Image (cartoon, rainbow, N blue to C red; front, side, top):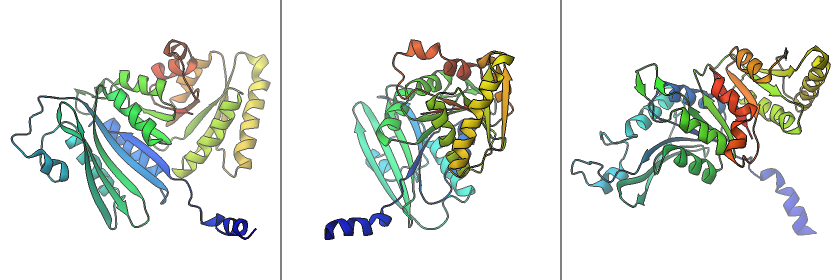
Amino acid sequence: MENNMTEIENFDEIEEPIFKVLVCIDGSEESYRGLRYALRLSSGTDTDLTLLNVREVDKALSTDGLDMRMARENMLDWDLELPGMESLKRGLEILSEMGYLEGDWDTEASNVDIQGDPLGDNLVVYTNSSGRKVTLKLMVAPTPELGILDEADVGDYDITILASADLDPENDKTMIFGSSVSERVATESQNSVIIAKALEENNGHMVCLSGSLASLNMAKTDAIMASRCDCPVYLYSVAEDESQRAKAQSIIDEARAVIEEAGYKVEGERIAIGDVVENIINDGSDYSMIIISGEQRVGFRRFFKSSIIFQVLEGATNSVLISR
């Protein structure tokens, strides 16, 4: 009995779970917009933030005669033109500019050898006195999408953010993490994914509701996440025709009740009539992000491609969050 009482007395001392965010950095301005959005989600002391750049194995990687052991130990101190290094350093600069790295941070660097690649995987972890972590990871993988999926799975992140475009309009160059990469990550990831397209921060989340239990849970989950970045939540449902409007309204009402019961706010609501995909894409452009429920496990990709989710991903001109 005494042991049980001790367990009860110590219950309040159990730490809150860490909110883990993975931001994929490819050097494009869109990926840095994704990083800035991640910083809004990372308010408070309960967030671990990882900046990831993935490059393919390069057996011919030139190091200009530099001792690679020394480069690994001091990867951010060397002015090296190594793939991905410049992108991560720019990400670190943005963190500093936005005040995210204020105070004292301990630094620890590590390396994992990758056969056939002289640089391998490299990690720099910054930790402050409250335990918050910022990790810069330069990773080697057969393809960028496989590297992102592996990191998201092994790291068990709450959310992964990556840009989606084949051309970066800011500097007119092809992006490393283009649309084919983002589509595969969105398809196969087991956790929530934000596909960032012209990401704007202040226009709110449009939560697309279908009436399923999954979409109801998604609405509550997004309300919780939106509260972290002070983003307004708008509930959205599509009726096939006017005769289905009442049903669409009841779906919205149920989601509103769940969100408000949990202590969160719904800023507004909207019902559309007609084609689901067309309406989501058109109306979603008024918001910072379209929120849509994804399957916990995707299964065969051909089934996913025929779904509403994939069509929205392909057609949306703004950012999409697939909630799992």
